[in-house]
Image (cartoon, rainbow over all chains, first blue to last red; front, side, top):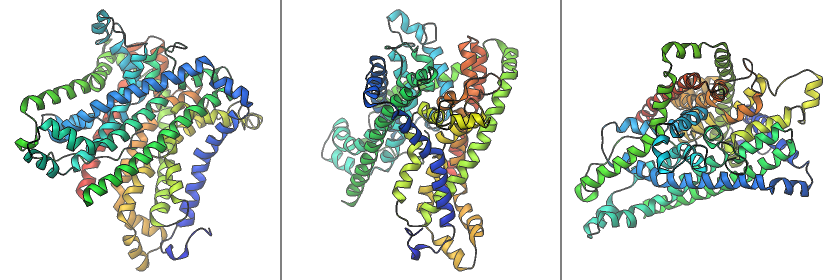
Length: 281
Length: 288
C-alpha cells in the first residue's frame, strides 16, 4: 500500500475496500479475460490468421458490423427525433413514452427476440403486410438490423435528451431575432451542439449491436455466410470443441469493441470540453 | 447494458414561445412519426407477448407456467439473481467507497476496468468461463479429478451472470458518492464515529436510493441474461435452464404460446423494473 498518500487517509477502510475490489475484479473479470487471450494464443500465428480470415468468419464479422452500423444509423435519426419530441413538445402519455424508451434495457433479450420474430415473420402482424410487397424481414439481415434497432434506441435517446434539456434558449432566441427560419436555426444553432452526444449514442448503440446475441438469434435464421452473426459463430465453434478457434474469433470481436469504447471515451471528453467552453463563453 | 448512459431526470418541458418552436403541423407530424417508430419497434412486441401467451387460453397459460421444467427454470433464475446481485452490490459499495473517498494511483484505470464487462459481447462473457473451467479449459482436468462441476452446472451460470451484471451497482454509486464528497464522513470521524458506524449512519442514508436503483438494474439483467448463460448452461432440462433459456427451448419446439407465457413473466419483471426505476429517479431528483 505504498502507493497511497498518507495525508489523504482520514477515513477508514481504504485497504479493505480497495483490496476486496481489486481481488473481486481480478477473479470475475480480469483472469477470465486473460484466459481468452491465452487460449487464442495456443494457435500458431498462421493458424490464428487462418481462423479469423476464414470466409465464413469474415462473413459473420461483416454481417455483425454492417447490421449494427445501419441499426445505429437508424437510431441516430429516430433517437434524435424521440429526444426532441420528449424534451420540446407536450402530448398526452408523454411520461409513459419516456419510460418505455428504457424497455429495451430492462426486457430480457430472448423475450424481445421471440416477440420481434413473431411480428415480422411472413405470417406475423407486420410481416404479413410486408410479404406481398416483396419485403422479407425475419430470417434476413433486415431482421437482424431490426432487432439491433430495438436494442440500441435507448442509447441515443438517453445521451441526447439531457443535453437537449440543459440547452439554453438564448442562442435560438438570437437566431430568431435575426430573422432565421426555424429549420435554419435548428441546423445552424441547435444541431451543432448535439453532435457530440449524437455520436456518443451512435457509438454506444453500434458497440452494443456488434456483440448482441439474444434478440438477434431468433430473427436471424442463422444461415452460414448469410445470416450468421459473429457471436453465434463463436458458439458454433465452441459446440465443435474448437476452443482456440472460438477464442480467436472472440478476441477480434473484443478488439473491435475496445476500439469503439476508446472512441466513446474520447468523444465524451470532447463533448464535456465543448459544453464547458459553450457555458463559459 | 442499462446504466451505461447517465439517466436524465425527465420532466420540465420548456414553455412554448411561438418564435422558439415549430408550427403546430410540424409538431404533430414529428410527434406522430416518433410514436409510430416507438409503436413498431417497442410497443408492438410487448402487445404481441401478451396476445401470443393467451392465444390458447388461460388454462394453457397456467399450465405453461406450472410445467415442472418452467418451475425449475424459475428456481434457478431466482437462485442466480440471489447470489449475483448481493455479491455485485458488496463489490459496488466497496469499489465506490475506495474510489470516491480516497486518492490513489491507478484510480482511473480501476474505474475503466469496472466498465469492461459492458464492452464484452454476452457470448464472449460466457466463453471466457468455458475456457477457464470447461472440459478442455485451463482448470478443466483439475476440476474433473476433484469431481467439481462448474460449466454446465449452476456455478457457471452464476459466474457468467456475475460477469455481465458486474458494473451496475458501482456505476450508479461512483458518480453519486463523488458528488457528495467526504465532508459528512469526515465530520462523523472527527466526532469519534468508527468504521462501519460511519458507513451505516452517514453514507448509507445518503446513497440509499442510488444503491437501490443500481441493484434493481442489476437484478433485471441478472434474471434476463441470455447469451452469456446460454454458453455455460449446457441446456439440461430441469437442471441448468434459467427462464430465458427455457423460453428458447420451448420456442424451438414450436410450443409458441408456452414460450410466450414464460416470456410474459419476464416482461412483467421488466415493467416492474421500469416503474421502480422511474419512482427512484423522481425521489433522487427531489433530494438533490
